Length: 618
Image (cartoon, rainbow, N blue to C red; front, side, top):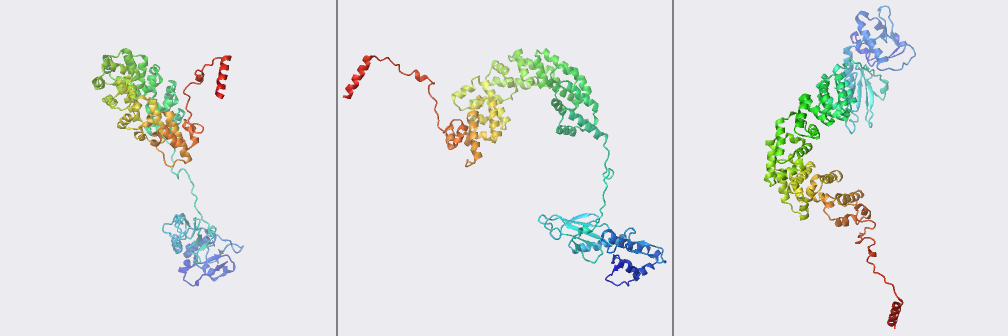
């Protein structure tokens, strides 16, 4: 073996031998084994310098075969120190030993200084880990990100780095104790011994599923089989923690089977459970199983939810049904009350009797009361003193007698659902209308009472679409023809305006004529023409609702249809070469009636005509 000579002379005291030995770069050669340095080392007492020899040999082995592996220059065995008979200790280059903590810290400090000379900031770097820093060469590029990856070995003796910026790519390595120079471009020559972390359940601190989680999973599977979607199931479980924790899965499964046996569809079952999860109580369903067979499915749904919420007994249901039948209501009326007004179970029987008596007192007969209750079941919940008397008194103050009031209530029971003062304002609007007499006659065709209620229905329709009540009254005053139109027609026009034409409901305040013109003959053709011209880019500017609806039919034709022949069929009035074809004033074949009658000509008539013509020629 041979030594690459150190840049200092080997004449220091033995106390400095440890620090000097770290500066040697050992490579294999046999002749140098007889060097005085080795002979001198062999005479050192093993008892006093045993630990020093271990550290020296360990670092020598680390440099040769550890973090910086190099190919041996000689095929012979690596350097080993033989005993000379004085010391019984025999060492080998591969003898393992723990690194000295003081030496490791010294290496790390030296390595940090070398890295700082390269402008690599190592303040936050941890040995044995990959550190992401700002590259001193490219400064992170345009994005300024930390693109430099620096790895320092665990003992602090070496470091490798590489910049992952595409425009930079700077990479290199350096050693703590070498010849004082950094070497670049040999990143792969430094072996980084990273510790592979073995992932176990203990390292992740995982715990086995508790009974609550497994129970919730089983409940989720049961709900999924019952018709719940993923979103509905997630919403149900998040809102009902106590139910999922305390419920019995077997009882829940039995409850679902009972509800399905009643004839409910899966979507009805999902709706019921979402509205009232406690409806899955098996004991409750068994109590109501007999009672539910006597009513319809829709009634059963409402009754079940109400009864479970208020913990009602089936006997209350039977008592209420018998009471309604004693009042003279038909089975259809009783079913309607149970479906739309299940709160009847909690109502006072005396108040219900007073309501029936009041309606009979204003002139409504039994069959009329049955019709009213079928159409408006909630009327049984109206108090006589609080609402019904005040409403009838208002109608009488407007000048209507009880016969008219009773007739109109039977014809349209929703009149009893109007608020106080609402019908008075509708009548006031009708009195201030400024329109043609023909429109007024159409509005008041069935009387003022019915006309006022028709106005009220149109106002409610406009308010549902987004207008406030004041705007709805103003719009109806501007366009009185709305009172004569069906509510379905108004809703269709507003839906087309919002969803198809992409205009807001507030545009009707500026163009109320939109609701007054014909939908199929004017609104749709005009929109099709404007939409076609806009798709072709032939519109100079944006066309609003006013420009579409306000012009007359002829003016709209001259502006948007006549210059573009392809819009003729789209507009509907003109076809072919955009010429108007006026229809014939008379039916086909009527010209034959106006054809003059032909009389037979005699020979005398012929001779007379010839002689007359000859006289003219002369």
